[in-house]
Image 1 (cartoon, rainbow, N blue to C red):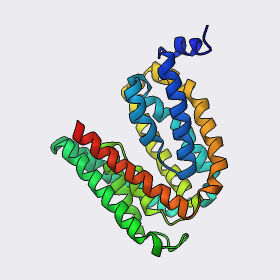
Image 2 (cartoon, rainbow, N blue to C red):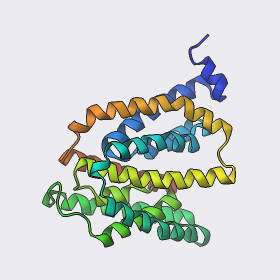
Image 3 (cartoon, helix red, strand yellow):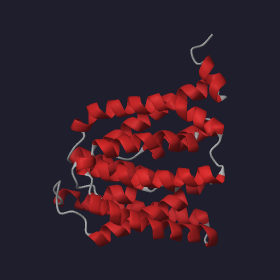
Length: 257
C-alpha cells in the first residue's frame, strides 16, 4: 500500500499527478513568499496540464492563506495609502476587463496585454540602474493606474500581479511583498466569494486544497530562509524576470490557442 493511497482515495486524483502537484505547489509558494508574486504563474498552467482537477480553484484556495500570512507578517511594510488606491483602481479595471471580454476578441486582448507588460518590463529594466532602492513612493495617480491595469489584466488573462509589482519594484522587500500580498488577499477573497455564491467551488476542489495546504506552508517556511538573500538588486531582478515570464507565457498561450 502506497503512502499516497489514502490521499488518492480522498481527492480522486491519481498518485502521480498528486505528487507533481505537491512539488509544484511547494516551489510556487516558495517563489511567492520570497519575491511577492509568481504562485499562479508557476502552478496554475502546469497543474492544469497535469490534471484539470488540480487547477485553478484548488490553487486559489491554497494561495489565500499564503497571501494572508504574508500580509500579516509584513504588515509594517505595507504601503496602506497605496493599497487603498490600487484596490480602488482594480474595480473599474475589472469592469473594463468584463466589457472587453464581452465585446472584443479575447485572443487579441491577451496578446495586447502580453505586449504591454513586456514593454513595461523593458522600460523598467532601462530605468532600474538609475532608481535606488527605497526611492520616492509611487504617486497616487500611478497607484490607481496600476490597480486599473491589474484589474483589467486579471479579468482578461488571469495575470494581475505584474502591473503592481513593477510599480513597487524599487521599494524595499517588506513593502513590495506586503503590499502585493494585501492586494492579492482582497482580490482572492472577492473571487472565491463570488465562486462560492455561484456554486463554482466543488467538494473536490476543497479536498485537493486540504491535501496541498501543508506544501504551501512548507514553501512559506523556505521563503523565510531565502528572503534575506533576495533583497535590493536581486529582488528587483526577480520581479522583472517573473513579470517578463508572465508576458511571454501569456503571448505563447495566445498564439498556440
